[in-house]
Length: 157
Image 1 (tube, helix red, strand yellow):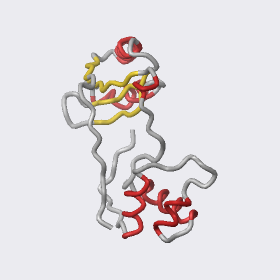
Image 2 (tube, one colour):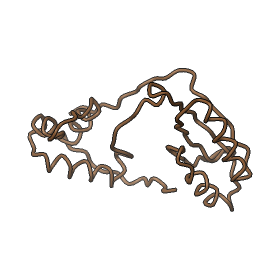
Image 3 (cartoon, one colour):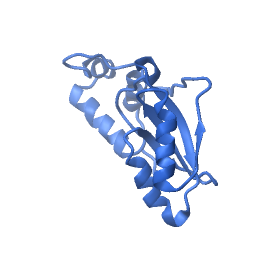
Image 4 (cartoon, helix red, strand yellow):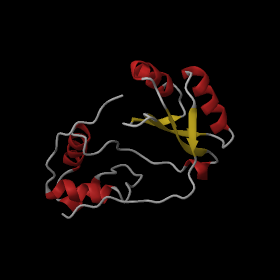
């Protein structure tokens, strides 16, 4: 697992505009960054370069589509386990080896490993959690979503 650093990356007005703009969606077309480039007053190559810099600097942790698993017939859940410190990396590798694990985070808590499962069917959640318990020897706690909220991050340009 990669730890996030506390290094900061300075965002200029164009970076802030791009982050705000790209959260609204990217068109599915031959030149998907053309609209964002035009609104930012830069070319498409500069849009890609800036996105790469923001990813490398940790300002953005991912860049890609978000799928609504439930609308596709699947399901999501948040899960956690307590991994012994001396076994943490091995257990993280085991957990991450499951294709259903979408994210995995280390936390400073008794439950020190938290991860999100994205599965094809709701029934698969219990199956995968049991498989992870068997593979790791750790009790896995399931924290299913009750309500969903979207919180956007907008910068003043």
